[in-house]
Image (cartoon, rainbow, N blue to C red):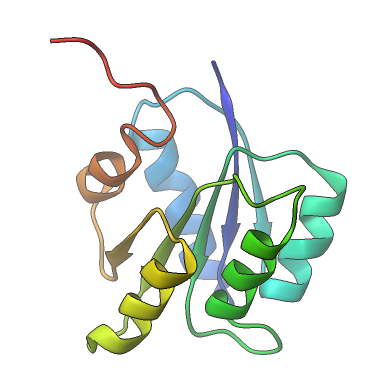
Length: 129
C-alpha cells in the first residue's frame, strides 16, 4: 500500500531534504505534503489524509510537541504515527515526545538509512522471517 506523508519543519530546506530522503528509501510513498509549523500541519491534515507525520520539535507558533499532543487528543488523527525529527541534544523533549505517543525520533543530521530504519514497521508491515 502506498502511503501519504506529512513533513512538518519550519525550515523549507529541511522539508526538501526530508522529501528527497523519503524518496531515496524506496518505500511505497504516494505523496508528501509539507507544513512550516504545527498550525499549518493541522490545516493540511484537515485537507489531506496521511499515514505518517514527520515533525520537527522546535518550531514557531505551534511546536512539534504541541502538534503531537493535538493529534493524540483527536479521535480523527490519534492513530497517525508521528516520528519526531530533532536537533535536541538533551533527552527531556525527546522523552516528552515519547510520553505523548511519538512512534519514534531521529536526530538531525540524519541519513536516508536512518529514516528508512525508523519507518520500516511503521509504514510497511513487518515481513515474516
